Length: 169
Image (tube, rainbow, N blue to C red; front, side):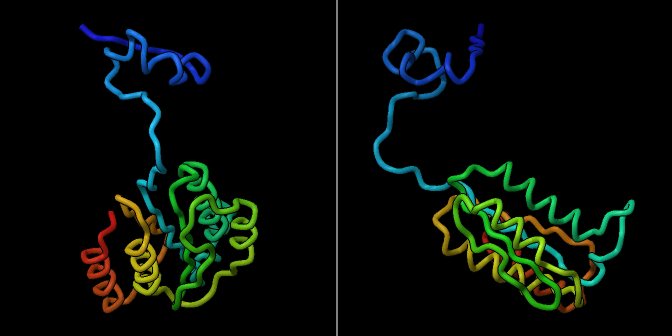
């Protein structure tokens, strides 16, 4: 047998279940908790702003597609989970430091101000991401790399070491 419980925001609030007969059947504990929940996930978006990002794909600059991807990530991440954005070409540029609930309007303005140019060096941006994530109080660490380019073999080797030793997924 099984139990399928359907409902919405107003029909499934926790006030009716912690003490009622349904509470014993549910696979979750709905009793209110004290204290503060620490963020479960930290995410850093490493955003390519090298010269090749000015190239067009179906009439749209790659840099604009990357900006849109960063904005979509903001919509998908819980406000309590820290997110940071670092842009890179030959060197990293902090767009938004790792923090919970970044201001979407301010972040969009910062993304619009980024112009493509320079060569591609991914490892320095991932070093920044790994440093942020090591200091963050999170149980899961993620980096989303948004790039169209290839990097030099020495940078690629550094990149592999950072990923291996960085403790993020």
